[in-house]
Image 1: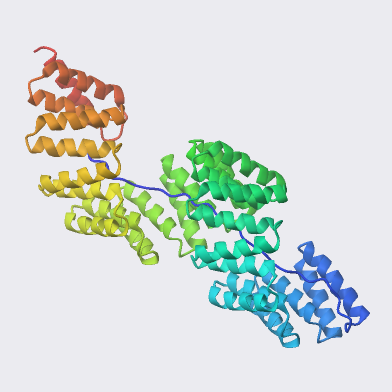
Image 2 (image 1 turned 180 degrees about the vertical axis):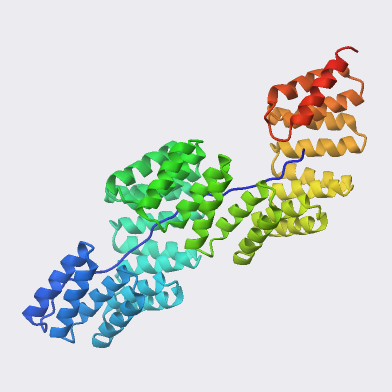
Length: 495
């Protein structure tokens, strides 16, 4: 009757960007090259990068020293993900003009997109050296620092960008994203709100403010912001995904799935949307669809630790412990600090009867996160199964110090007290579990059993009746307990 704690995570995505596009004509460029160049700029602004590249290439053919044309063709290549060609073009622009701050900025962005944040920062440093008032370079260096996990430097760069340009909506939005990551939701919301005052059509700021509201548990405001982001940009897959997570948190699984479906229609390679839809299917008990979605997320992103974790969790619930452990192993390989993966792998080992491995995993989870109450609960259950009730109680006590509203910890401690012969403490703990969760059927059943042991038969009958009111004939794993409770009520009422 012991509950193993399982956790499913939903992922939301923050969107940060910034690119410089030059449209200025140099005096030493021929009029034909300039005309073609400017037409390429128009194509690029419309998102027609194929034609933009053709025009920038033609301008370069006319004037092989046309640095702006190399720069802008590099931007177009960056936009379509051809980073090798993009960097080659930025390199050529810098050969022609070694003081070309925008080309350093844009090459830095290409390196950042490739995950090479050190090179990105080096290039952005150079852009700032050339132009100390280059707000975009500070913004983009802040993005690189953010990607490296250096939130302090990221905020410093966003601050500088705002000092240079107090109307820089993107800098406010990006700074808000850092504050959000730091758990400072109030500052995050203030920054997103400022970005929206500057640009009321800034879909990403609505999306990010919605995330901050969601983190605060204010899903109604979150949904309102996601709605606004979608109104501004009906193709905003991020906003649909994030609105889906908010609907899921509110228990509206039908709307959540509809939003994840829409996000996937817009972007069929959106791993997080498959992952999140899989989590909802899992909650609905549709394990096959859940696994199919986790599979797809992993196909798209083979390094998606959370997808392995959730697929492993689903296999665990299905009783397929070998597959569960294999997936949790993979999650831990990708992220060796993944406390929940150790927790759930421990649960699988425990159910397979390997308590020593289970305890080792719970120990590791607690090394990573000493405040993980569920790991204390599960380690206590393992100690209890091995007959070490004293250690079990010590772990349940620790779980309750961390979370005084943890009904399962009271229930489990009550069982340990009963086995140690302390029936009064056992009843007190079952009562506390029921106060926290009035539908805790197992606590009512065990309380009834202890009352019988104490000869308090009427109280036992009442506890068994309360148990029956909390379950139905179809409740998984409760058939035998339902039958026994009915029998005990019938026998005890005659006493």
